[in-house]
Image (cartoon, rainbow, N blue to C red; front, side, top):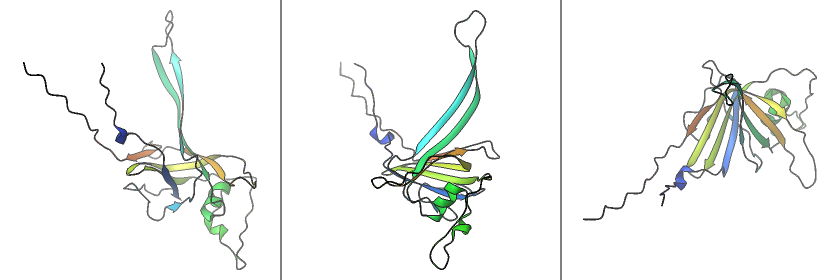
Length: 199
């Protein structure tokens, strides 16, 4: 019978996590966990968690007289992060959703803030950091240059939490990297082989 080794401590459930944003050019966190200033937390994220997207296209080269490709070339490789932000009255969340500087969302003396949506939005690239935690097992994703490239409709309904469902696209930095990964590395526990029978 085949002996298959399985290590539960090498698996992961996205039980918890968070997201942070900082000005473009901010260096990534050096340790797993809550990053320090100038990183700003995105607050509560919906129970759908974080979706790490991989979108790639390939061009196949198939020789004459052969029915399968003998080489492929990657023609597109994009990384995205999808999440729903629930703290819709947070200044940083409003800033992200509507491409408005946080400073423009400071409340006045009466406690209200206002802004206008432009018909000609400008690019809004920022640095992003996402953390997924399963107890002591963690994975961090640092995006040095990312932008919200997709925003879903917002539903205001009595039996639903209003949320901003966004997709962040990662762009390459000066080193041509889009996402930097950090994770808690564990050496798998390999069961010892039973002693050989004595002859």
